[in-house]
Structures are given as C-alpha cells and as structure tokens.
Image (tube, rainbow, N blue to C red; front, side, top):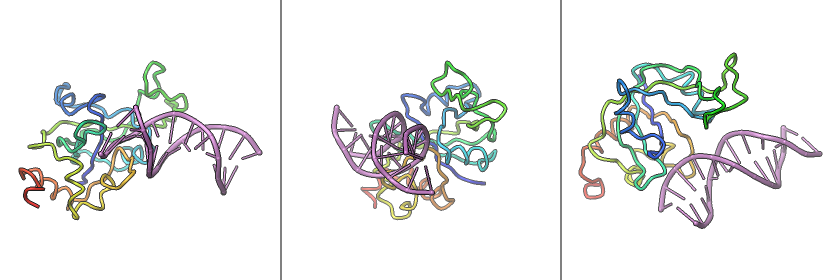
Length: 161
DNA sequence: GCCAACGTTGGC
DNA sequence: GCCAACGTTGGC
C-alpha cells in the first residue's frame, strides 16, 4: 500500500465538502499538472491512504485522512466547455487529464499546520516543506505517514519538541 | 496584497 | 532546443 498527500484550497473543495458528499466519496478533478496527473493515472491504487491538505488558507496544513476508491480514469471536466477546468486539447479519444476517486475516512484530531511539519527533521524530505514546491499531489513515505499520525496526537509539537 | 518560485508557452 | 515572457501557486 502507498501513501499520498493531496492539496486543495478549502474555499474550492474542503474536507468538510468531501465528508458531506454522497458515500463520502468524490472525484478529484481539476488537476492540470503533468507530474500530479502521472501519479493519479499510473501509481495510485485502490486502498492507498491519503492525507487531505488545505492550502492557500489561514492555517495551511493536514486536516484529514482519506483513501483511494477508484484508480485513474479520464477527467471529464476537461471535455466540458462550461467547466473552469475545460481544456480544448484534451480529447475524449485521447484524454490528457486523469483523476481518481477519494473517500473520506476521518478528520485528523487537530489541524497539523505546515509550520509545524517544517520543524521536524524526520519530514524534511517531503516536497511539501520545501520552498517553492507547487506539487498538488505527492507521495508520502511509510515512515513519514507514521510520523505524522504520531504528531497528530500531540497537543503541540512546539510545546513538546 | 505581495512576491518568490515554478511550469508552460511560443518565438526564434 | 533555448529561453524570455507570462500565468499560477501558495505561503506569508
């Protein structure tokens, strides 16, 4: 099983939106980045565990856990001229963009902020904490996954470094 | 709102 | 194939 982290701006799509969706499941559409596309198309498997990350908001950080319930398939929003994710270069016969389906598991016990993740040497290789990183989907190692799940249980890592 | 960092585009 | 210009991401 593999682990991942997926970013979303909560004003566009939040973990509460995912929880409220039918069957707590939603397709992760709108990704228009080739690296992220390749991961969804080729690598993410049913059962893989995923951190939900809120970006571009007051406290950016990890807010929940979810799992892959459907593997990569064409992102139909690219075919819809009315969608803001429309891409005229994506042809249904030869789709350019892909998505996966994701199901809500739970919120983390607290938001684990980016500022805190940056304080831990064990996480320093995560693309997330590297300056200027813009990947919206990234792999998480098993060690990083475990580490963050332990962090989540702490009241505050700066009080208990 | 600012701006650094990055990815994409397109002229050559 | 290079690279400048441009648009976007996303933390702060």
